[in-house]
Image (cartoon, rainbow, N blue to C red; front, side, top):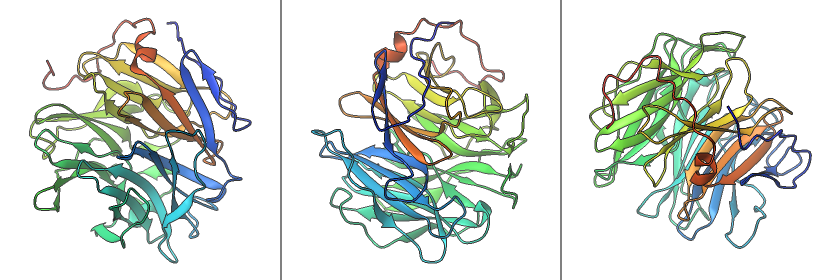
Length: 370
């Protein structure tokens, strides 16, 4: 199959790299404010059109000097502001941040705080901003249960509620995601301003870090990162689950045809109604970083491009949004979790690729989105 956009990403400098309509730019590295370690990252578009980026950084993944940093990009410039600390809990480690502006204008910052040696001791905290992420509230504890974490972008459901992807990670081995790990969702009622948890997505090897889309009213699709270890294998796939009741309950997680090396994935519903999935198309490496597009509500994915491959071979934690101008923004990390990259493209850049022969899911959904 011909790929129209394959970039051997070396990112030796901050100079933008373009190929066939796909623009990728190295925006922050270990030399920039925020520490040597920068991983992972999230992005949102603010009401004034600016882009706002959040990541956690410090001297290392398990260091206690980590904090959550924020930076912004105005529409009239191509230079991001210097990262500044927006969340820092004394004596413990911060983790994955998710920044998101809700329809009512409030900007939410969800982030992980780790109280022990492994992520299974984490809780989810949150802050809000009422002035476009210029200042932030005091932190509030969103989930008190140990092992609760956040990583995926919230969505607004047809009934106006918000759905925040979260997950519960079990085990105390830093190199293994326990089989009891599950994905689930927090539902926010914008009228009562209260959060409630969904039933979990369970699967034989465990799953974490769900990404979710609403196909139509009350019918949702989620893709999750698989559980298990990080060693070479031939049976690691992205996990798929569906909901018929607006995300309150979920089907058993089943393997898709997408390989997964125990790495984060993202799923986005475009304004056109088509779906994009971004993931590492390998069972052993976080390389390449691949995007596939579905024009049939997730039953198959018929267009594929590689956004990044080669070079550092560690393109990790992709996170996508579509802005008001219909452009798609993708952020991801590389270079041993020390560099943040930003890709900008349009749906037509993916559709321009020659359609593939569609391969159905290994375990189809118990119902079809038609």
